[in-house]
Image 1 (cartoon, one colour):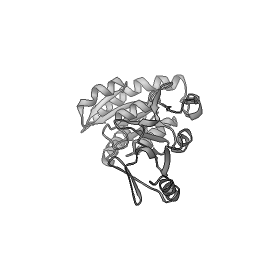
Image 2 (cartoon, one colour):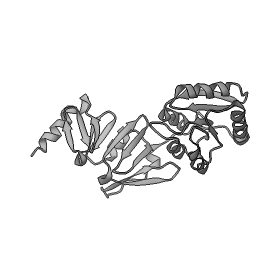
Image 3 (cartoon, one colour):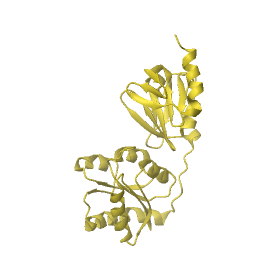
Image 4 (cartoon, rainbow, N blue to C red):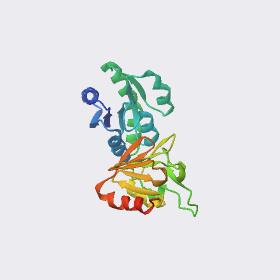
Length: 250
């Protein structure tokens, strides 16, 4: 059996995929979800063989998802946008299904997946993939101006200059690092990343956010503004953060 996951930010679309999966004997539906982050966590845990994946999603686009999951599972893209087909095939997707998806076209894609996945499953069982952050990150150096974060494939690391980071958002087992012109997503908890960052200038203001104090434009009540981006200040972190601001008051 091929263990399947249906991912789409519209629940009705996952129900259609789930119904189609139920009609095909060699497919087993593990879960449907409207969260790309939840889906990526399941893939990282080694619980999924095949993902039916939408491209336009709020937290992670389908292309970002493909980059992060690497070769941990096979993917069939499901989308209303034909212009993404080339990007999808560059990431070795099995097929590209345009909505609305007819069952006969879905079955053809499923048969292609069966031909690719089942020989591998028969030859060697699926072993859950456990990410070890300490092993995947290169050792720290004495240079305090930058850090490396894990990229979308094995042994790929992205160099990030501390001075370029505006703020960081935690999303379960993933973090998004925001710079002036880029958003980078890596498989790591916000707590682990916090221990790697120099303090100052970085300060945790919320259970889901770390900010660079150097980049703050305005502090207004329970919010911090970096550019036009409003970031909440959590109750747990409020007093310590406001004390930091007062200590640097001119």
